[in-house]
Image 1 (tube, rainbow, N blue to C red):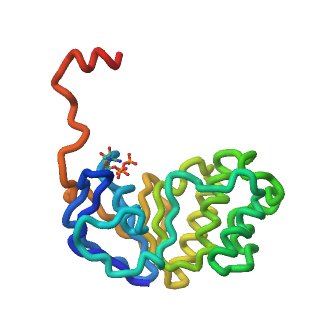
Image 2: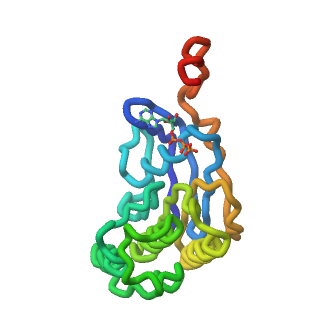
Length: 209
Ligand SMILES: Nc1ncnc2c1ncn2[C@@H]1O[C@H](COP(=O)(O)OP(=O)(O)OP(=O)(O)O)[C@@H](O)[C@H]1O
């Protein structure tokens, strides 16, 4: 699905972080956000997902079409892997969890409680949820954190399949996923304010030693 934004300004808390963001992503395409730490990648993704309303500008899609994978895994700790998957499947009206289980190699973990998974296993379970949403725009914030090489490849296969089916994606990632139709957007020109400026006060620096 095509999606884009025009002249978007986004905030975190009371601070406007980005202004003038404009882009379009075609069906079957992925847009990779590249920018230094603190530049506003999470801020933009939260805005696209509807978690923080834009300060101004236009979203030319419905936030109901966005599946957002945040930094946090967002699992139900007391439920098993299978119960977590079934919970989301029921929410999104997708009753077959098998493709998600197979794509992220979760078969042997189905009865394990989410709180007892390793960090990489939790991430696999969290990402597998994307496949249950049936939403066409995937907005992903550092999705490969905690994944080993084999599971990065599994995730890359999942997103490639999503794009091949006419979906689209926007993601903040520092690694090359080898996606065939990926473009890069540098957010640096859209930064609204000077952030993370070092203090000139030498006594303040000493206080942190
Ligand atoms: N609640 C808040 N109130 C004010 N400023 C915030 C708040 N949360 C985050 N920020 C600031 O907003 C800016 C953008 O943060 P954001 O998390 O979007 O950056 P990022 O590009 O995703 O960074 P990273 O690569 O480190 O994950 C940062 O300077 C951050 O300190």
